[in-house]
Image 1 (cartoon, rainbow, N blue to C red):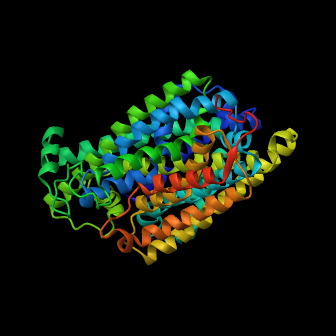
Image 2: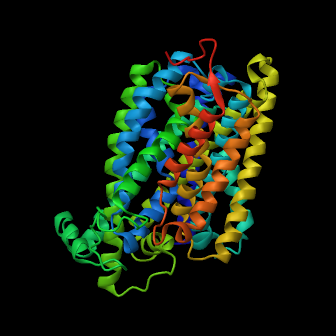
Image 3: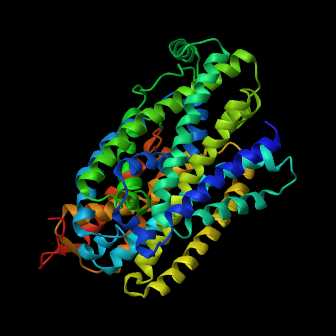
Amino acid sequence: MSQSLIITVLIAYFGVLILISYLTSRNADSDTFFTGNRQSPWYLVAFGMIGASLSGVTFISVPGKVINDGMAYFQVVLGYILGYVVVAQVLMPLYYRLNVTSIYEFLERRLGLVSYKTGAAFFILSRTLGSAIRLYLATVVLQLFLFDDLGVPYSITACITILLIWIYTFKGGIKTIVYTDTFQTFFLLSAVIICTIIVAQSMNLDLFSLWEKISETKTSQGHSMTRIFVLDDPNAKNYFWKHFLGGMFLTIAMTGLDQDLMQKNLTCKNINDAKKNMYSFTAILLVTNLLFLILGGALYVFAFSKGIELPLKTDHTFPTLALNHFGTVAGIFFLLGITASSYASADSALAALTTGFCIDFLNFKKREEADKKRLMLYVHIGFSILFLVIILLTNWYIQQHPKTDIIDIILTLASYTYGPLIGLFAFGIMTKQVIKFNWMVPIICLAVPVCCYALDKNSNLFFGNYKFGYEMLIINGSITFICLYLSSVRSKTDTHVTN
């Protein structure tokens, strides 16, 4: 693809996003920014959440992983289903019943101010790190295939990326994002479908023949690329039950206990619409992840059949083939897909972080509207700058460790940072105990992930060949729960707000 074509496509794309922002943010106030005035159509929320959930990491890393793991990642996706059932049936009714703006307000009502601030702080830590690292992938693709040739430094590319997100989210907030994410999800799904069809056609294969070819092709481990279930080695990181249960709890944590995705659900008119949204979203997400894995297999079948030398980093496989070997149409849709997936995830995170910090730490609800708008602006700018810093640090780290798997970094970070949230919410929902000394809550929530990290790094010493996978989130949350319970006493008053 020519540089002029890439620039034209990007200008047109962001022009539409800014237009959507203008139309949806007219007469916007702080309630519009935080809740969308609770008027969002559930089907738009469901469709738009696909883009926010998948991100550029799924778009690039999941297809790239097929060469090493086959389709074992789908075990995690199957675990998502049970996780979304828990979110829809347990957590969302709780949030709607309490009529919260920030979901961590539940912790304040149930366990007190210290637990509330601790939970909110862990969300900000986890979502800031995860979203910035996800967005990093989009900046790298733009740098490799556009800005390097123009002589633009990477730091400028990162600044432009953050500035564009800020421009179309700073006023309308979550109301704007419901519509921009719907627009972006359309291009994300179109990209994966169109690129798969183009790859199949380039090899004169229909989709059934393509699946057979993928099945016949071996991974670097000697297994079929279509292998999903890993049941023969409990010590392996991608063993079925580790992936399945890890996927379930990752969903509970990264959706049900995450202000970002829950903020979208809370913009629906009522709990019934929110549940329709969640179950529709689950079905679409299941199919979408399978499509990404099929695309990954197709990429390697194509490359092997054409004798194409692939980049060392699997994250670069899809962009290299799409932009250099599949033709203009595939290149355009790849560019739109990676941009859509990365920005759909990052823009909603930026709005959610602004919401979380304003509501949870700035006593926002008691301020005048003019003061609210001023603070929102400052906080929004602050998190934008923080995103930029993390992106630049991530780029430096990846330069030092070129074989790093981005999706594993993100899910591993989630295992440590969301574990305390699972423990806190489980303790609040499942017991009627209260913490005896509130100051112990942040100490427990900080100490447990550190201990889990030490356990993971010394797994060979303690457990032989056993390798921890995504089940570390379950272990982290469980230990947090146990420590909180051991530090608690029976409540003398009815603080069990879930009933």
